[in-house]
Length: 115
Length: 115
Image: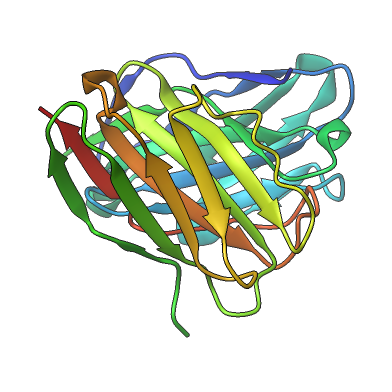
């Protein structure tokens, strides 16, 4: 089964600084990869996804992620953090072998933006 | 347009009671998923419905959990004889099809508390 590793449950970043959230997956076949964001008391919202097209994926709110097969990674970045980026971020993977789109999620990163 | 809706938003029940959680997917979406989000286990896949095909129930944690989808639209997740470890946020998602790269759109969730 697929698994996803996100290190550092809580991440603090200063306003205006780089946001970097790491995601590594385990897979013997190229998966589909997703980053979701969850604001307090809300459902998950898709930030971006990798579906085997371009390895550098741009998403909403200025976020982007790069798929690196050699490192089995899909790290999320944003050049300059904004207060509104405070939320929980989840990396997820879909395994093509299941024949459906069930997602396996990482444990999440709670991002705190310091003014 | 309308997103995924779930009801109730909060449910408090006593141990041993049965509960029903409802999900209304986005109109026209053929795929529907249930996930559970808890402090200890993170986000876990529970069950997947696609059109009239047999559901993928492999994520259901015990036989106290069941789900149905009527008319290919609304879904109900039922938990019988609830236990305290069932306390979690139950999230529903839908996608236009069950293809692996499709975006899943999440509802706001139902927070279940078992006393």
